[in-house]
Length: 217
Image (tube, rainbow, N blue to C red; front, side):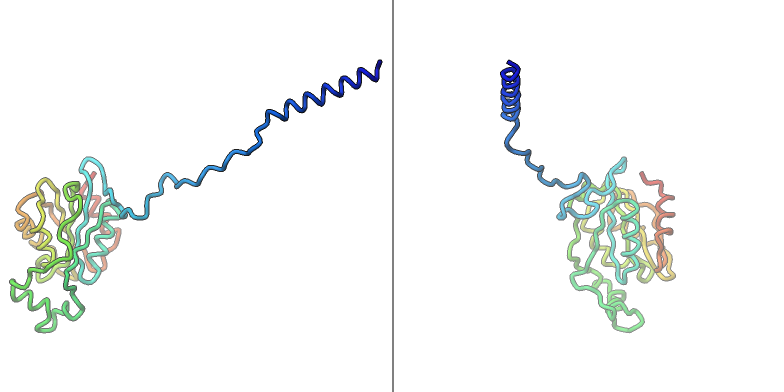
């Protein structure tokens, strides 16, 4: 009798285990596909494509640089404000010889002496999404006390209505002078602020101090 009872108990255990195994899935869950991190952006997107968004809208830093000094200042401004950069490039770039004002007959000397030669064609003189920018910095080197004339074409080609425009320049010794006022006359519209002159060896600290004084949002 005891043997029969043990036999029945063994059969019951075997049947119970079989029932449990039959409910287990035969396949394992698939591994999720890899997704980009939340802060990852498509490589085709331009850096700082959204500019600085706030009460004053977005910021654009436009500049012409002959020797790299103004470009350095523009880079600092864009980095600090989060603004977009737009470089003004002549279709006929200036060479070192062109820029040598100590040589009679050099390109810049000819253009200085003959204003009709200062209409410099640019690779591009308009900016995508121009209407989205409320604050526009415009940078240039000082040539003979005024803004380097390749900037003129950009100013004349765009409508600055409703924008705050802040000029800045670089030079080895000359001040900003009336360069900003003359560009404002070319534009004819917008709120042109007092500009700032930086030395040829402009530092990020110099730019930061100036931007802090502007109290931009």
